[in-house]
Length: 205
Image (cartoon, rainbow, N blue to C red; front, side):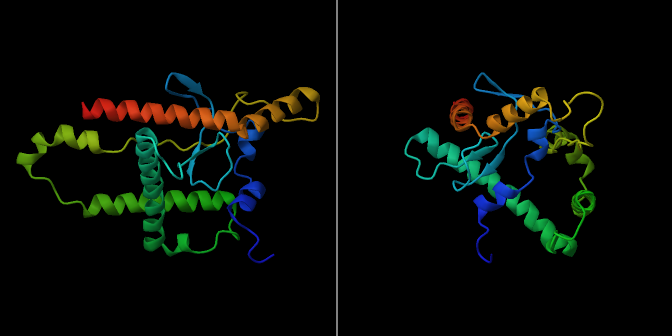
């Protein structure tokens, strides 16, 4: 019905985490505050569920740690939104509705627009003088973003197949429960708050 699709309804019906629940998503592992994490996450605002795949901002932070974390989380989330807005303003194909496109076509469209955008930025960048080239070489290398690799899908026997027998079904349910674990969500957020606070403290010193 019109007006009934809010963020929570959309994420409940969305296939965003289907590949992750089925065990076909790329394997991820990182460490935060001496804790090993095996699930990636999205930056989201406070309306979303308390899932381990969401790192939400703190609505009314009171501690200095929470305040700094909220500022950093909201800033990074805003950077992602601005990047997509730049693509929408530059390429009209990104502004249109995506419902009629095939998922693979959408993937190639977004990759093509990102590559073209980077080519335009590189072409419009002013030429460096020979005198400044040597002095700024180290700084320029540090400022350049790292190359990202595009996941082409599962290959080989790295992922468990999903079947109807009890063994695979139990694995499916374990992953399903792990994604929606509120305790893991709280632990991840608290670990990131501590980790970010320690980094900021070292930078200020």
